[in-house]
Image (tube, rainbow, N blue to C red; front, side, top):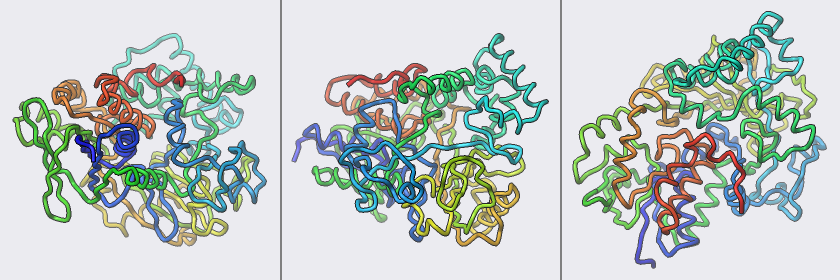
Length: 519
């Protein structure tokens, strides 16, 4: 066994990527500590009576070739049609020699990306497009206001202090108020005027009406998909049995390489002294166990990490700011129904002729649901009875212990069902089954004490062998690929090929990750 050990907190995309890289490319022994019984963190897949629930919906697409190659190395892309493509006669570009998803489970599917906005009880393309149906659905008055507002935003830019400024600069005030303001309030519980513009710079950088029009022209001349904003892509790859399958496969590969993964191991304290982390203690089945190591990689929430330091006292200012870091919690309801009330008016074929959307942004302000997943369209193998049922994921955003969080399961499911009925998506008699799942600290937030995050980061960087990775580890609303890249950079740093600046740089600058990487 190696003379050096890396303790990795969290078995999500960041933690598992780091463990795999260390196990495969170095002589450092990785030990992953995961507080839950699940592999994959926020990218896990919940299996409920044979119907698989993807918490949040995870598209496997990245502009970074290293990430794409990493995914395809773990699970190769399909070489034969999936079940629904065979039935519908859908033609896709498949991988020559790739596995047959009807036979093999260890396979990535090529999936069609369709996401729309439900507003005024009508569908709008996401992002907003210049198609005739957009103007018809909006009506003449809203269309004229939207156009004039966009032109005003083109010539009169606001200083970007808040997320509201960021969005208005790209879409104009009327379209911002129609398609962004209420939805953002649902997600964050705050008006965009009270959220840092940093959120927009990291999550929707480059997305605008101008980019949308450029994309339309680019498709006419056959431009490279990798140069397209991730919010605009037409296809993505996806594990046959949901994202958690890929991370479970990777976990098995890590174990085969000699790495360790300890489940139900909640880190409760971190020993720190003389500029180094010495060990962490985790509660496992009610008993404390100490893990010593040479390197420590943390994807646990920064708030909990700083609170857990048990050695040199944390400066009072740092302790206060970290304790007050804001998060948004998440509730999803998996709902099995016989059919949808929505009519498929698109030209896209689906099993049962349901709408082709992977997910819908619910912009209606008379319901609290924020987004709706249709898992039949993510993968035909996510649904136990694809031909006769539709498996939905209803997404709600809340704060721990607020009214939504505190409702019991039956009460919450009844409320959620009522909302889908209200906006015309289902009929109550068609609901067959449902389950509720709650996730704490799903979204690091960009308001309140977040303004002091710079000093927290500087403090964390004083511990020479501590590397903060992943969404919660960096308090940054990262996608899966960003989380993986932060882990890859941390491993490079451990190997002496870079420094911590590169770890924090992932998805931090407007131009970072916008350019296709070179091999």
